[in-house]
Amino acid sequence: MAESVIRSYPRAGIHGRIVHELGEEIGSGGLKPGERLPGDAELTERFEASRTATREALKVLASKGLIEARQRAGTFVKPREEWDLLDPDVLSWLSPESIGEPLIDDLMEMREVIEPVAARFAADRASSEDISKIEDAYERMEKSKEDVQGFYEADRDFHLAVLESCHNQFIDRMSSIVGTILALTFQLQSEVDVPLGMGLPAHKEVLDRIRSGDKRGAEKAMRATIGQGRRNLDDRMGRNSRRRR
Image (cartoon, rainbow, N blue to C red; front, side, top):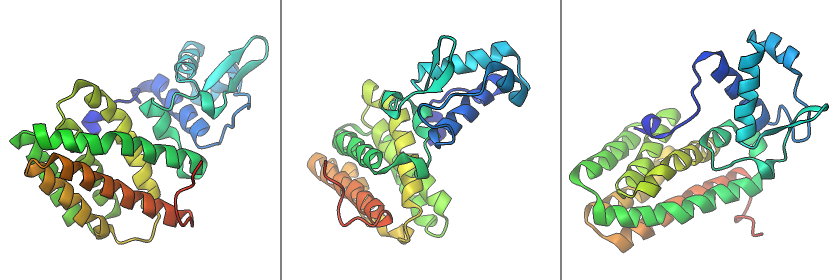
C-alpha cells in the first residue's frame, strides 16, 4: 500500500534520473549549500543527456528550493532552510548522515502533530475494510521480527493505513509527506540495537483502540507509539532525552 500512496517525481527516463541523482547528491551532502553545480556541458556529458533535458531537470530542482541560478555565475545549492521540506522527494533525498539532530526532532514533532489525531479520527471513522488493512500491516510486522526491511515496511504501511482511515482529503494529501518521514525515521531507528518486536505491543494497542472505536484511547496509544520511536532515536544519538530548543 505504501508505494501507491507516496507520490514522487517520476524516475523513468534520463530526465527523471538527472533529477533524482542530483537531488540525492544534494540531500546527502555530496553537494553542500553554497557549492556551485557543474556546468551544463559537464552535466550533459556525465548523464549522456541533451542540454534541454539537463536544464529541465535543474528547473525541477529549483522548484523544490534546492538550487538557484545566478546570472553569469552558475547554479548553486541553496541553504537547507530554503529547501521545500514538505516535498516528499526532498525528504527522501536526505540521508541519515546529513539529516542532523534539529531536523530529526522536527520530523518527530511533525509525526506527533498529525498521527495521534489521525488515530482518533480513525477510531471514529474507520470502515471494516480500513481496519482490515491496519490488521494486515500489524500481522506482517509480527511475522517480520527477524527481517528489518520487512518489519519497517509493514510498520510504515500500518501508520499509512491509519491515516487513510481518517477519510479526510487533507490528511490523505499529507500521506505522501508522512510516508516519507516514516521511511526516513525508520531508517534511523533500524540502526539502533533494539529488538524489532519491542514496538509491537504499542502498535497492538493502537489497533485495538481503533477497532473498538475508542477515540481517546487510540490517540493516547499512538502518542505512546511515536514516543517509543523517539526514545529509540535518542538512544541512537546517545541522548538521555530529546534536545529542547
